[in-house]
Image 1 (cartoon, rainbow, N blue to C red):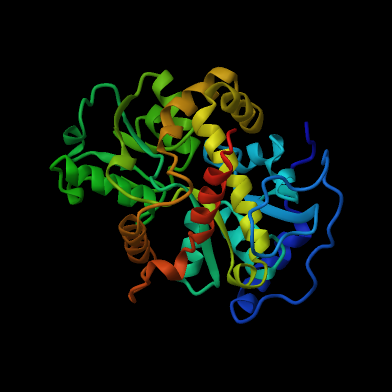
Image 2 (image 1 turned 30 degrees about the vertical axis):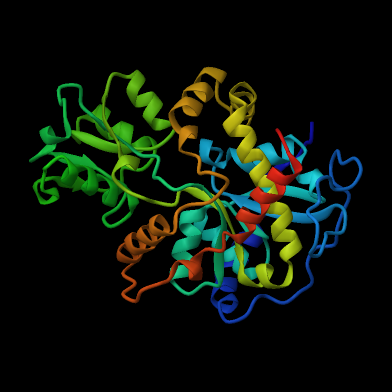
Length: 357
């Protein structure tokens, strides 16, 4: 089994990224790409290489940023652990960075791809030269948990509801669910700052009648007896996870993008077709009990997209909602923030080859 596939971003890198983002939007940071190195546990060259187009030097180095060890970030970890990255000629490593830092790292040329797809879209809408090339999940994986005595969303009228911040995706999702249940969002008092475990803490303290939760807090909330009023992905489209990269990488290194997307798509199909194996990988990656990984698999992996793609109208709605969230007043076409041609080509390649996980 490959080792050292994930690590934290070096502190020096983090210190430099904020400066690099400003300079990088005008032009990507100078300097050669990392030299190819031997892949951990690699054996042989790429398999199932698509016909036509440029190919990679074997063991091409690629660094992928991910924000947290959560269910939505398991895909590329599986691509490494299952050897799909080696099959595509990649020496791949995952580094831990939050969404903002990963956008800055992409602009600075310090990482090659990022998995915080929503944050990368936000950076793109603010002018960063980034595009998403693979859509893993296009729904927010939020749930609305309430005190046990509240039986429906309608019961939240006149009560406090916990969110992360006004105008962010938790706020938008909560307002969409309230409106869908016939409750005017202005009738609810939104309490901010309840992110992650703080959402559950707010429920436990009785500070809120309900709170927007995300994995794995939702599992803990349910176990403690709080009532799950709604899965908020039924009310709002939002880019939760995928792969994004710099426009320069798409333009000058299409073989690298093709290889990374193919490896991710292989993992994507593996997750959809192999429940038991995926749960084992999830438990190791998230460092959670197998039972918790199984709950997360059954609850959320049914929302994986078909072959890393999403309908153009849904992507347009995602961009519109995120523009409003960010205060961007000019329209942005889908093709300015997404290039899913690599995902389409990868799916066609694997289908022609009869590839099975």
